[in-house]
Length: 209
Ligand SMILES: N[C@@H](CCC(=O)N[C@@H](CS)C(=O)NCC(=O)O)C(=O)O
Image (cartoon, rainbow, N blue to C red; front, top):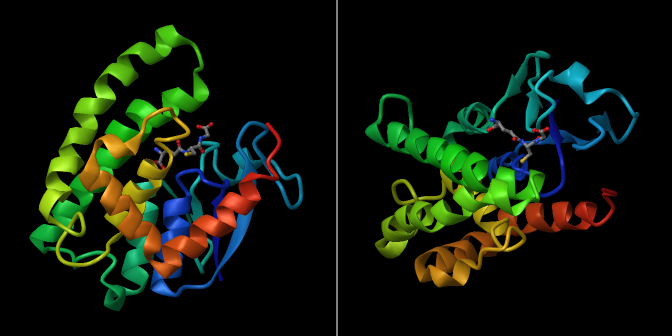
């Protein structure tokens, strides 16, 4: 069975959403990101992945895969009929990768990561100054579209929806971008997304700092 190393409400939530949208079963293994320990057996998470970061997906044959963009595409390609990723070679596949990269670098690493890991104002001044411009890009794109790529939900939406969810705890009110706010509501209304968030929000409450 597939195994996903995750931390509640961290970026690995996008992989849980993708697995649930695809109807794929997986064993979920919770990690404490500060201590780098696996919750269930206290194992050293860095021995699973030296990056010490989630997501880590263990494939059926034992291969390990890290990095959101790779893990999400692997999950989508396990169930092509789910439409979670356009087929390789289709221009929309590159559009999908464009969005995965944008969310992972500009929003996640450019803003969310420093906000949650570095608390001092000096370190946060530049990311805070830049986030408004960054978010104006998906905001304009989604003004007249339901999804980021094509006409259906893809892993790019799973990834962006996770990032938008974390904006509020990071001190940014998504309501200032009506198209993003409406998009996030639409994403959260999807049964698989709703269920994935409910599971992780409940687990998040049990995490000690
Ligand atoms: N480049 C990685 C970044 C993954 C990442 O930063 N994950 C965070 C959770 S949202 C994490 O595990 N951080 C722990 C750490 O960096 O020590 C990816 O896109 O998958």
